Image 1 (tube, rainbow, N blue to C red):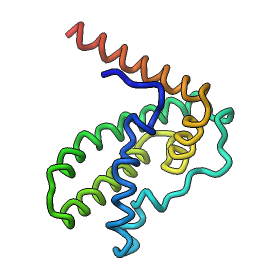
Image 2 (image 1 turned 180 degrees about the horizontal axis):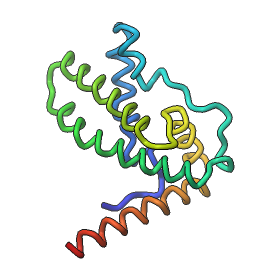
Image 3 (image 1 turned 180 degrees about the vertical axis):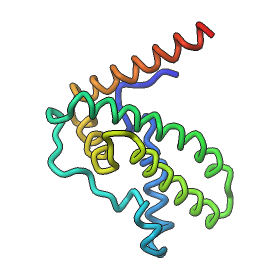
Length: 148
């Protein structure tokens, strides 16, 4: 798999997958569901690209990979579902899975993830640091598949 230099705007963002539709489908649901609604979570304020540590970059990349696993699981189901209510329920479930996937990454929270994502879209140096780590993961995965 080849990954282009722009991070999550075109990459793995399940946030983009689920957030616009989730805003439509969860607005009339209870507060328990909204706790996992990505559109209601604000990025960590004032986090700039030059403040992002290498540990945060590593955690961000781990979160990207976790989000990709959620996307691979849910996207085919969402696309194959014709019923709007069932699709909305799947999107809500995918949103919750994305939040959980990010929160399960050590040293990462959803607000930090969102702030780093935004900073990386605006800062080429941070984007490059993230892409370098993604490339290392891909190179390592390629090595594993050729040696097995």
